[in-house]
Amino acid sequence: MRAWVWLGALALFALHQDFWLWDDRSLVLGFLPAGLAWHAAYSLAAGGFWALVVMRAWPRSLDDDEADASEGATRP
Image (cartoon, rainbow, N blue to C red):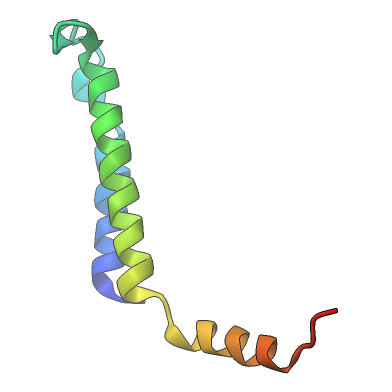
């Protein structure tokens, strides 16, 4: 696996521990607690990162083997 995947996963792990927002009582957009806003943004970033990993770092040979196996199979 590529090094950037490991570094990104470690960064996501570190950023998930939002200890700096535990005592923050401020509201984002006037209604959303800061911790919840952080996790909403974190979730979008994590989803985008893992989508990028699948598109760029997924081994193409895994997809080729499944495509070859399904071509030989007959459907009822």
